[in-house]
Every structure is written in structure tokens, then in C-alpha cells.
Length: 160
Image (cartoon, rainbow, N blue to C red; front, side, top):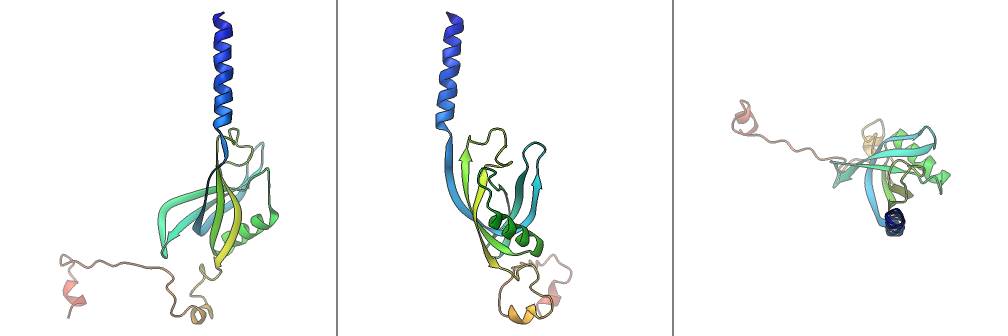
């Protein structure tokens, strides 16, 4: 009797767990520069990538790891991401996140699956090479903040 009760509790728990999983747990988009994109895996090969997220022209410390869904691989997305990683393009990634549907990592190593890639800036990675400087003049590429304090020995040099 105890064995039947524990088996029924186990089956009910599995049904509840499986029914609570969501294919479309969340949707979103991230903007940044692809720093890594490769095909990985021992048993199931999958395309995995890493995006350095940018916010208002500055790199954020928040990394974003993503996968291409093995259930629905799109060759155009893979080609565009590979080019973006190779040439340093700034891109917008549209994704959906799953909850509990990727237990064995057979779809990809992460739960964030890319559904669309939009190239925002192709000259982002090489903004100051050759003739690109003329095309990008007057554009903010990145922001750098310099803090000068009175403790700095060259303080008076900056304020004449």
C-alpha cells in the first residue's frame, strides 16, 4: 500500500512539473556585440553564442548567453550571427526563453533561443579604420568618463 501511494505521488509530481513548464516563458530583445558564436556539443550539436550587451553606447557588465533552437534551426539566423561575430557588428537579438523544456540540453545549452537577428550597425567594430572615419564623423561610438580629483598630482594642469 505504501509503495502504491509513493508511486502515485511520484507520478502526480511529474505531471505537475511537466504541465508547469512553459515553451514561451518570456520574450525579449537584447542589443550588443557578439563576442562568441560556435557550434558545440558531444551528443547534440548546437549553436551557442555570447552577447556583450550595450546600453546607451556603453558596454554593460551583464552578459547574455543564447542558443539556436535545434528543434527549429534557421540557417539565415546562423549565417547572420556568424558574420556579426566575425566583423564586430552591433545587433539586436529577439529571443524567447523556455522554462523546463530543455532538461537534457538537446535543444541548446541555454534556455534563451534566438528567433530574429537585426543588424543595427555594421561599422561598429571598425569605426576608425580608413575611410570609415569620414562616414562616422559626428557619431557617438562609445562614451568614456574621466574623473579628475584634487588628489591627482596633475590636477592644476587640467584647470589653468
